[in-house]
Image (cartoon, rainbow, N blue to C red):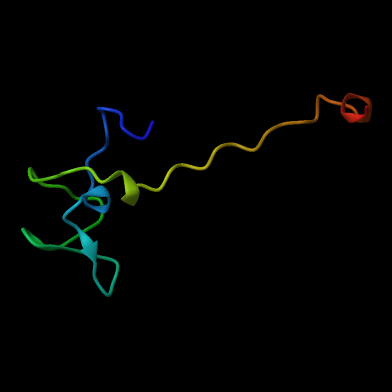
Length: 69
């Protein structure tokens, strides 16, 4: 869910965080922070979230006849 209440608080999904040159993020309140960290000023930004990949579908139970008209 995109707007669920139990969002994992990480700096990578915070409104205030921004990209720095390296693997760390830059925060106007804390300075350079790791993407996994968080602070009490965390505000969720749904556009920064990267969704988890869904599992590949298993079509092995079907035959060619199931897909023909």
